[in-house]
Structure formats: C-alpha cells, structure tokens
Image 1 (cartoon, one colour):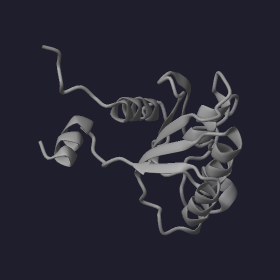
Image 2 (cartoon, rainbow, N blue to C red):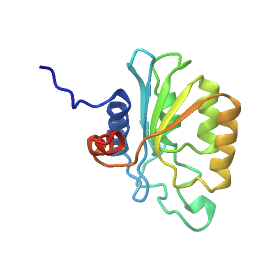
Image 3 (spheres, one colour):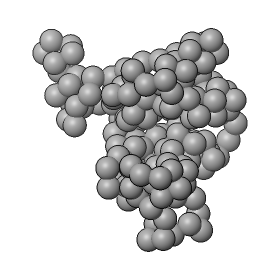
Length: 163
C-alpha cells in the first residue's frame, strides 16, 4: 500500500518558504516566499534581505531609531524577492509566505497577477499596512488562505484534520 501520511501541496510549498527564510540574515525576522504555478512547479523563491550589491555587513539591521539607521529603507521583502526572481509570467500562480504580506508587497503581488496567497502568521494584522494590504488584495480578488502556524506541519495537519 502507498503511504497516506504525505504532505499536502500547501504544506510542501510552505516548507520551501520556511527553508528559504533560513537564508535571511535578519536577526529579528526571517521570512521566506515560494511562488508556484497551477501545475505545482516552483517559479520563484525569495527571502528578506538586502538588494544585490548591498553588503549585509555595511547596512543596518536595527529595528528602532532614525529611519535611515534601521533596516526598513533597505531590506527587500521575501515576496518581492520571489517575484523578482521568478522564471515566468506569474498570472494565476500561488505565493506561499510565512508572514502575511505588507501593503507594498501586496501591490507587487496584485500587479504580477498572483491569484492566491497561502500564509501562516498574521501577527501584524492590526497595523495600518496590513489592513491596507488586505483591502487591496480583497478588491483584486486575490484568494487568501491561512495555514495553521506550526513548525511541524505534519502535526498541524493531524490536529486540523482531527487525526
């Protein structure tokens, strides 16, 4: 008999997003993203970090302080990196991301034609940026799917399915 305790496609691709996040050198937030075609083929992958040519030893990683001395004006988010690293037209694709996209990434997701976002954490749901993001994504009819947040997706799946 074949195995039945295999990962779902959503679990599998979220796992790739988690693996990508491990490339981030950000000391406080590691986010990964994986873009997948309708045929379940990876067409883009990314993580949060500085743009090519910008040394992570010369740019700041701080979260607080004067804006130009923090990471925020310099870091490229995982979603945008995945879009920029994509290998094909993204119309109709799904993006898997460990953290709900900000308003800036939402604009890029919508413009690229991505039709579905699968995410885990929504820890910034009460911020103005995420509220704006959700407003735009809903207006653009982008499907939003939240997976149970868990390090071990197989355990989360069993808990969700009641096994």
